[in-house]
Length: 266
Image (tube, rainbow, N blue to C red):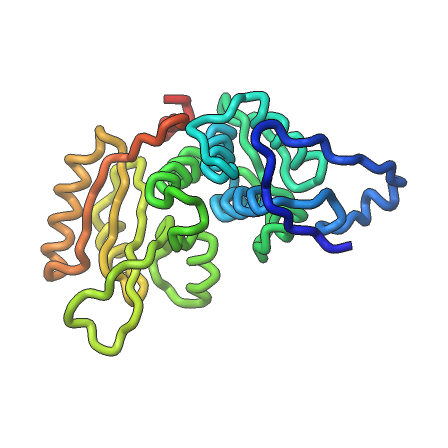
């Protein structure tokens, strides 16, 4: 049985999926496409979650609101819970309590359903604040999830192959700079920095940027903005004025908060 892609016509709370009794053996052998019909909204959110490793429930709520048939500013907690429960019952995601928050993690079945050839991520507590911040920055830069051309870190890693380029947190299509000859594409690299980095690490990151990098935008906490701006300006001067670098404060996205770098809720 193939997964059926249906338009997402629900205006509020999703209908309960029809559950069929399965033997234990059948449950173990369950295929990723044997669950309930997935809507376009389901697939878009599942893809975002898989690309960003895992997302906190507040990020999932923003995604569901933005991708609703009639986009709304905020969904009720009950509606979000019911949608997440539907995914869990289908075997597409699981929920886990970590660092004082509930997180949504895609299963292998959910990754396959969303068309991602990636392995499920095994959570590392020391990376959660970073991954969450990157997801919030993506919500800021890609208002309609999946339609802004965002290339996630996991896909950049796949494209890099055996090369030694620096791995950014994301990338977006950019205008090809004047003077570039014979090049038809350019990229803006997105970096999320929650800590002050040693100068040699920044020099190495800029020197080993991937081909076709037009410019790099760093997103940092407000407390780090001044120091990192000065540090990067010095490094760029050392490298002859290239690449073009901008430093922005972490954006505020309605309905979402940040984790402190140590993992404590901020």
